Length: 343
Image (cartoon, rainbow, N blue to C red; front, side, top):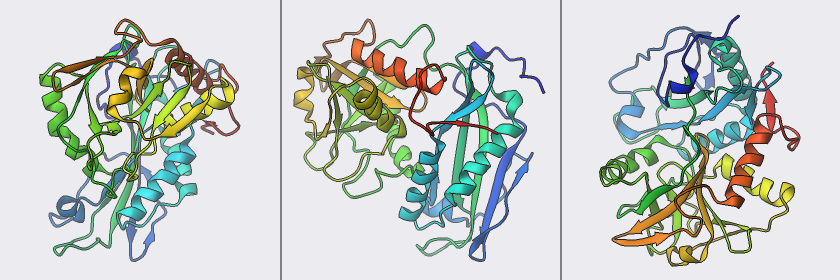
């Protein structure tokens, strides 16, 4: 087998149809055996539950080649566990964690020609998704579902280096207190589409959402958790009073690296927007970019400049980024089980 001949550095972060996907269906109280298929289309009833009551959740992770040409993923067991949590919250039958991992392995191996070459900056993005296919008219959970994993190659998130971005404080709420903000459900992202379009029109890269109750505490952005570095070079992670922040796998990994690899003090606590000027560095973390440095925040005309500035990633943030990506690529020894090789 041979790697596809693509312009890997310029393919962007868009959908490219690959050869195979994994599909399993839930019916009569159990999941079927599942299979690798070639058909990228989905056919379902006009009355499918996902179309009316948004019974849907998803995950996002990556496969990539190491320098010695192994194909690996980063902590897919946490994606499997988080999808179980999402399914339970939405009254969907969880897809078993062991089968999730096996399905990831099968679909990546089937599409190994699409895994970008080492050093290209590109990766194979993996999208597991589960949705209600059973007929539902009344407001009730469906009785049939589909679990599917497709993959698509994506280019490097940062071209020419990770430059600090400018974000704005949103007038909208990402999630309700005690709602679904702590699971990876499509409905949470639907809520953020109108605000992000408006933010882009105004020249901002992202929205910063505050807690829906008091609108004084930092929650997260539309697609990433927030991390902060104090003036002593230690990590501070905003915490939600109402459990409405998505438990980012990247954020949890960064926190571990900060404490156990770099020897930094890590504090997770509620952080007020008014405290931001006191911090030295700020970043947004997630699967796609790992860490996006933030240079300034605009709060209704009031510009809050982060001390690390708009020219480059702050020194502690960069060390966190370099260490975590070094572990992912096999250049730095990480905790056992973090790098999962595709057999």
